[in-house]
Length: 153
Image 1: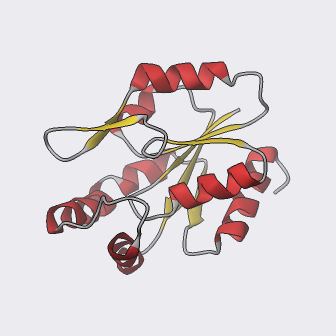
Image 2: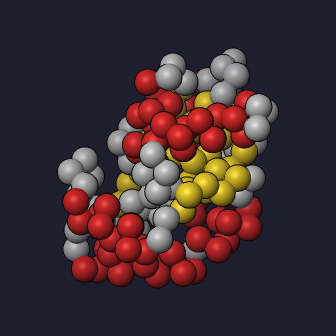
């Protein structure tokens, strides 16, 4: 099963990927693993064929997680979609304080995240199989996602 972990910047997708990897799952991050590229408009897009190849390469595994948020995600073969969501104030604080990714430090980038929260997140919510509160501790968040994906919830 191929599972998309999606949500706005600052929801903790990369942190969740690290937790899932620590538990032995195949988990990839669009930004950190080189599957995302910046566009001229400041938005990031995915290397669609590379992501498709990654998902196909791991077809023999029970579960493969891929984290990111891009317009291209609807064109990829994910069997499950999990939306991580958090309040605006939490996202802004995480963007200001994170050290692993510079995105979200500029006023323009933060404004884009807030616009996406209003305009894009409702679309993601409508197509999600599971919506999770990303303010939960990462271990609890991973437990919840795994219970849903593995059918133990």
